[in-house]
Image 1 (tube, rainbow, N blue to C red):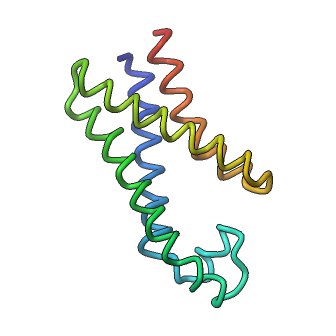
Image 2 (image 1 turned 180 degrees about the horizontal axis):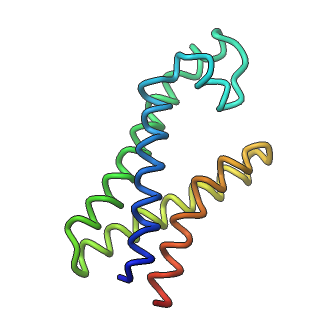
Length: 122
C-alpha cells in the first residue's frame, strides 16, 4: 500500500477514535450531544445507550484501520482497507439518512474513500 493511502488510513482511524470518545465517553456533555443534533438533556439520556454502542463500533473500526497499518504486509493492509470500506459505507448511510449530517458524513467517509482510491491506483 502506498504511503499516501497509509496516511489516509491513519487519518480515518484517528478520526474514528475521536468519534468513539465523543459517543462513548463524552456524550453527556451538552457541547457533545448537540453535535449529534440532540437538543435537550432528556433527549440525550434517551439516546445515550445507542450512542455508547455506536462509539464502540467506531472504536473497532479504528482498531482495524490502525492495527492493520501496524501489522503491515498484505494481510494487515487488507484488514485496514476493509475497515476503511466499512467507514466509507457508514458515512454514505449517514448522509442518506439525514442530509443535515452531510458535514459529519464527509468527515467520516472522505479519508477512508481516499485511502481506498490511493491504495487501488498507487
